[in-house]
Image (cartoon, rainbow, N blue to C red; front, side, top):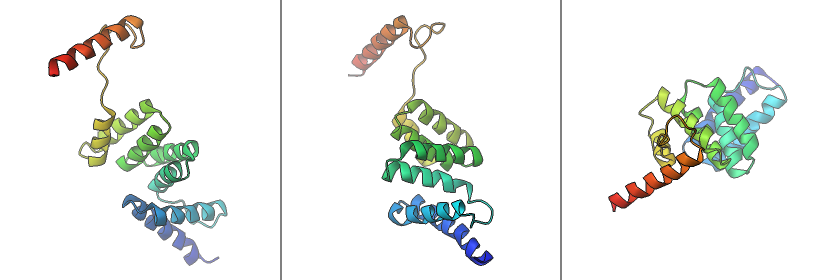
Length: 162
């Protein structure tokens, strides 16, 4: 295989990311998969762009239900592309598929720390909501007293809104 063929996989990775980013997963995910296969065979010069693993992970989690594998890919991408909020967005989305709200919230917070104006991260943060501080701060959130008082506080506040 020539160097030009190898470079084509880099272009394939970029095109796959662009397609997935625009919501065209039917065309984008197979392109990303071809790059994965090329990487496994050692046909790639260098490594794919950092967001490659993020989109591939999100794609296999969402469309192939390989959530654990997708989450590992997204974690790998977030470690490599720690400066790109999209990596944290995709990690948060996969974490939600894995019912890991805590990691989803942490990923959203990291992404917003990089780009506070990132629209999709802001929307996801609003959807996830924020937890209030425990009623009795020196007790853990899971303490039975905090749980009872927290429920009481919540009921009281929702009653006053109506």
